Image 1 (cartoon, rainbow, N blue to C red):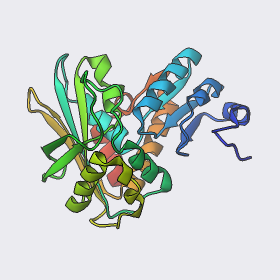
Image 2 (image 1 turned 60 degrees about the vertical axis):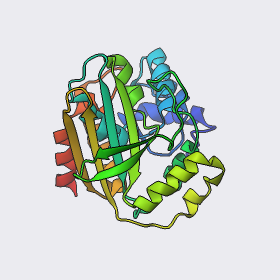
Image 3 (image 1 turned 180 degrees about the vertical axis):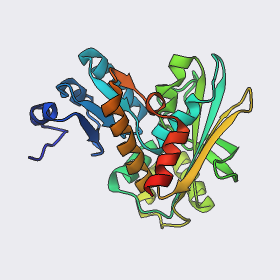
Image 4 (image 1 turned 45 degrees about the horizontal axis):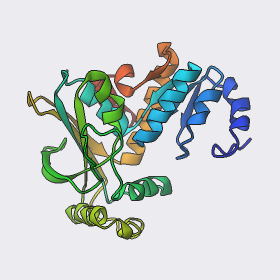
Length: 269
């Protein structure tokens, strides 16, 4: 049976109770699915902060169990941030470098296009901050310094408010030229269509780094093949959620350490 999560929540509600864990890797962001899990645990790989916040609210109202964010960012990045021991008032910078030489699915491309020039939701600042416009040089998880662009990855929504600290995420691509192109698209959102047509320059490496500005403490991870890594991390978190007896909404940080997640990539690759 095929279910369209955009229109057929009733069909989803019929199927959900027959499963222990459901992974939403469809790219459809409909928070109403949290209301119809029938006791199943939902693992959602979305990287959209506003959607995950709405999903959390829906899950709380239904007393449903949901893993918010599974993959590299959020997911492994969430675990890295959570291990910094940040205190209220701290500021955390997260550098996310993704391989622009790797072919990504239509949903991932559409998500990136949707960011261009749009405001970052639930940001720690009071003023408007737009995607791909603020620049910062960071030492990445692969030990290389790059120019990163502010981007609306949702760890500031998942961890920051509860801990009383600010999280800011920044994106770079493995091709410096394509990172510069993203900056142009951020300044002129009408050019966002070029993201779909961009050539696959660079390689398939990825790297994550989370740094506490106050203490200088950092956590990092790196690897290759973002798509496969996302699938493997999601599978691990689904397994963990099934045996943990979890209730309510949790993140990757609640289910596994960054070391366990990184080790799973090495073991499964």
